[in-house]
Structure formats: structure tokens, C-alpha cells
Image 1 (cartoon, protein in one colour):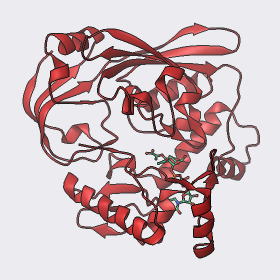
Image 2 (image 1 turned 90 degrees about the horizontal axis):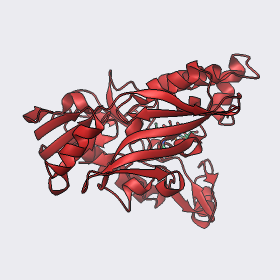
Image 3 (image 1 turned 90 degrees about the vertical axis):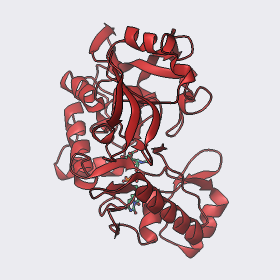
Image 4 (image 1 turned 45 degrees about the horizontal axis):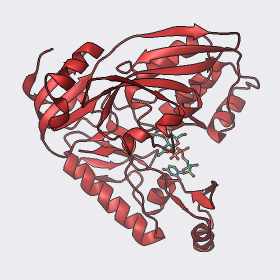
Length: 338
Ligand code: EPU
């Protein structure tokens, strides 16, 4: 394990922001990580732990230790007549795991095709797309406790998953590093195609009873058609979370804005697509300097090349303020601001 000094983080974040980290280390085994935690006293250091760097906005040089988790491997560890349990190490690319499952015809991850990032980051924010979230197939994970270096298991219930939320963003934030995740996947095809865009894409292709592969292909097609590829145009996916507002506030807004979309939730709440709010405020496709809101999906902020993190942050704050002024709704970032 080598600790490097003054390393650019540009290749390690999908926004492509060029800031430097004082120290940089790549971890390739659980044992190495445990040594870093104990002998190098990671708990006491300022640290930035990351995998794919696809949900980060780096706004300044990082005067601490950047730790890239590069643990590899994925395998079937158990099966019965109906299910198969697949364990993946946290440094595996998320989409590679999805393809591994799809190619074996194991169901449950196909709606989450092509989400950027690594396996270890997926449970942190309970990644989701097209009517599925990882909590639906998540069995358990192992994480190293930074303070002690001990390996600890978390069950689905213990992770306290919510919309883009888990215990790792709340009660135990910065206390653990996820090293592996196990998923329980269906052996008998059981697809989830209720989400509008998937239904439409499959209908256009004339597929009535889609295979797992067909659903994955549809999701890949939809994502490619409206979400920019970070390798071509720097971005971190959705920049903001979709806000949840009181049903009464939603009804009032509906009078003023009859087209406002909303999805009813429990507890008298309604989820409103932030992309719609941002588009109404005139930001969709608008470029400001080296940054802007994407032309096909207003919720995605992009780096046209050479943008600084503070430039993107300034645009995000401008958008947040504009949505607040127009609709009285606060939209909060989904990405981690560093
Ligand atoms: N919309 C607009 N204008 C836009 C974008 C969206 O009006 O520019 C409205 C439309 O009414 C559309 C609705 O928003 O019907 C929903 O849009 P979309 O299906 O693209 O989903 P989203 O709510 O904007 C969420 C996730 C995405 C995920 C998609 C698909 C969040 C914060 N984002 O976006 O996740 O891919 O659903 O399921 O929940 C990510 O987290 O990085 C991400 C891309």
C-alpha cells in the first residue's frame, strides 16, 4: 500500500473536477483497509473515501487523505430453487454487476442498469431508477469499522433504507467503509415494468412479456437517450433529490401551475420531480460559463470542460433559489459536496 502526495483527483470524479488531494491511497484488500484504519489511524484523519466518484462535487483542494476503494470480485455464494445470492466486492463497477446478473438471467437488478458508480456506494444512498431500488434485492453487507478495523455485518433492516437514504448517510456517517454487498436475486423471471418510460420503450419494440435482458436493454436505451455519459460530458447524475411536499401545498400549487407533476406517497406527502421545477425556472439546456443544466434532463448539471467545483456549486445555488422563489419548494442536493 503506497501513500502518494499531492495527487489530482480529476480522473477519480465523474464531474471531472481538477482539485488536488494532500494524500492519496488505493486499497485493494480488506486486510489493507484494516491496516489503514488501525496502524494509520484513519479515524483521526481528515478523509475522503470513494469508489467511482460519481456522486461527488469537489469544490476545493482536499487537505486530507483520499482513499480509493478498489476491492474486486463477485460470485454466486448460495442458491435454492427460487433465489440466488450474489456477493460483490465494493470496488466492482455497478453496471458490471448488473450485467453479470442479467447474463445469468437472474432478476432484480435489471432496472438499475447503467447507473454510474461502484457497488460499495450503492447502499449508501439506496440507488434507484425506473421503479426499483437496491433495498428490494439487498440481503446484507459487510463494512469495516474505521475506529477499530473490525468487520461488521449489516442486514437490510439495519441499513434503514429510504429514498436515497441509509444509516450510512445518517447515524453512522463516516464510521464505516463498505467492503462487500450481497444481493438476493430471482431465478424465476419476474420483471418490474410499471415505470412509464420502460413500458413505452417495450411497447414500441412490440415486446409484451420481456425477458430480464430485454428490460435491461430498454433501461440502457432510455438512459442513453437522456442522461449524458460522464466520459463525454462531466456530470454526477441527478444533482438534486426530488422534493417531498405536503399534499395541501401540492393542491395549492396545482391551482397556480395546473401541469405540475406529482406522485402521492404515504403520510400525506407528494413527490414532485425536481427536473420539472428546474425546467419551469428556465434552466434546462442553459449554459453558464463552463457549466449548465443538461438539455435532455434538467436535473443533471454538467461540466462542459474546465469548470471548477465552485462554479457548479454557484449554479446549483442559483437554481435552488429560483425554485424556492417560484414554487416555495426547497430542493436539496443529492450529490455529496466536498
Ligand atoms: N421532468 C421534466 N423536465 C426534465 C426532467 C424531468 O419535466 O428536464 C419531469 C417529467 O415530468 C418526468 C419526471 O420529471 O416525467 C420524471 O423524470 P425522470 O423519469 O427522468 O426521473 P427523475 O425523477 O428526474 C429519478 C432519479 C434518476 C433516475 C430516474 C429514473 C432522483 C433524484 N433521480 O429522476 O436517478 O434515473 O428517476 O427512474 O430520484 C441519479 O440518481 O443520479 C439518477 C439519474
